[in-house]
Structure formats: structure tokens, C-alpha cells
Length: 217
Image 1 (tube, rainbow, N blue to C red):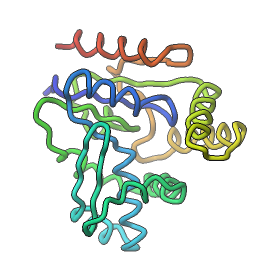
Image 2: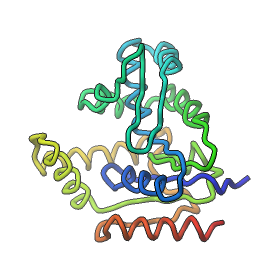
Image 3: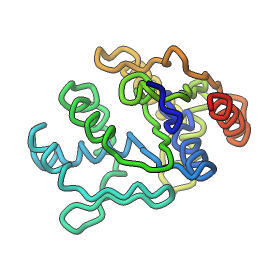
């Protein structure tokens, strides 16, 4: 059964999913699910527990606040958001995301996020696996050069020293991994609205996404 209150946004790394998801959530007053943050939180739990069983138990102990502009994940009375933003956790989360146990455990947590007005869910398999009942599904993409430049400029603004060539190589590697993995590969849902944001502003992408949502009501 279709659910008009769920919008999924899938796509490769640095395609602008997170930004679009936040803008849609603010525009529609919907709740937000940043699946990438959940994978990082699971990776953090796994680093502490050393097993999927232990990681799931720790994840259940988290207090998660999915605030659109200021998300918080608390564990043992500490907000661990800053710990989840490290490159070490990001790399570990990428590796763990290919494992069946990781995805099985996180699907449960993602589907039970709880929302009243509506939900914007962004990730790699939101429309295909986690919320197949979503009535509005968006697949957001851009060419690798554009995505690498966006990520480079984002890191540069944060004062993080990096190189465009390294980022482009990392994105290409991540694309290959996401597309070729056997479990929940990165593909567009059959009924997804495909948006190529290579030459579009975020405002133009938002307009297309809102039009897609309202046309499905």
C-alpha cells in the first residue's frame, strides 16, 4: 500500500541528498531520516562491541533526536555526533554497510523511526528496500566531476586539507562499491523520479522534488 507521507531520496555519494532532504523536511514540516548518520552510529557501536549482536544492543541504548538542523545521538549521557563525523568512522561505516547483518539490523531501526506528519528518508536503498511503500521516490545524481568538486569545496570551507583528485578517486571507488555490492546495491527504484543535479542549483532541484511530491498526492 502506497504511503503519501514518505519521500525517499536515494543516490550516490555527494549528489546532494542530505541538503535536499533537509530542505524538503523544512518546507513540508516532515521528520528527517539521515540513514548515513545511522550507519555511522552503528559503526561506532560496532567499534565498541566488536560484534553485530553487541552493536545492535548498543544502538538500542542510543537516544536519537532527528532534529533537522541539529541532530543528536546520545550514548551514556554523551552526545556522540562529533565522534561520528570522523573519517575513521566513515570508512568503517562504508565497509560495514556491505554486510548482511548491518543492513538487517538497521532496516529495523530505520523503519521504526516514528513520525507524525511525514518523513523524508535519504540514503542508498530507502526507496528500494527500506520504504518501498513510499509514494514519492527520488533518485538524485550528478556526474563524478561535479560531485567531487562539491565535496572538495565543502571540506575546504571546514578547513580540512584535501585534494580534488583524491576526493574524485574516493567517490569513484565508493560508486563502484555501492553499485556492485550484492546486498542492497545502489539502483533507482522503478518508479523513482530521476534528477541529474550536475548543472542545477539546489533551488532548482528542490522545485523539481516538490513538484514530484505534490503530483503524487
